[in-house]
Image (cartoon, rainbow, N blue to C red):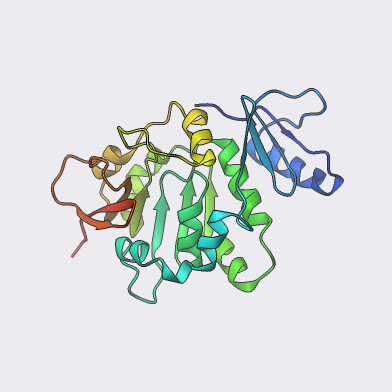
Length: 242
């Protein structure tokens, strides 16, 4: 799996931010001579990899349209059993770009996003940092904790979360049409491994696995309840403690 070799910026307004992220993630600041895999802090910030670029903006584009309609996320609400006013404690074991995590945070849930790729952690941090100063965005940001780690380190504490969420992303045998973002992620995370089996063996309460609609199940177990959308589904396993 690729990861960034440096952080750069040409905008003085981002110099301090670049220093802070460099220190937090132990990634060097770089100047005019920079490695192929790096992040350029800007508005928006850009992840560079093998001549390709990845932007993760929450302020515009297709995902912004989803944000404006977050209360309509009926499928997500069913899969995560968001019926009560009490927020759930959720572990997102495959953080990625943090899209589903942010929708869940907007819905008032408490999310720990675990992502072992530093480049993706920084892209998510910057997407959150660039949001307009509205109270509902501020509340959602405060609902999210980002951990740069392998989610398997959380296996022993699975019972501490109401829901464990896994989005394997690359789960179809068919070469379905992908967005430019997904094509980038396909190559950037070429050695990605799916932690679904590991979490299924853990002492979880509720395990939610996102799949393409016609993709085979990640877990060879018939106990899943599936919630189907037009192109994706959520396979849900429960071991609620009585």
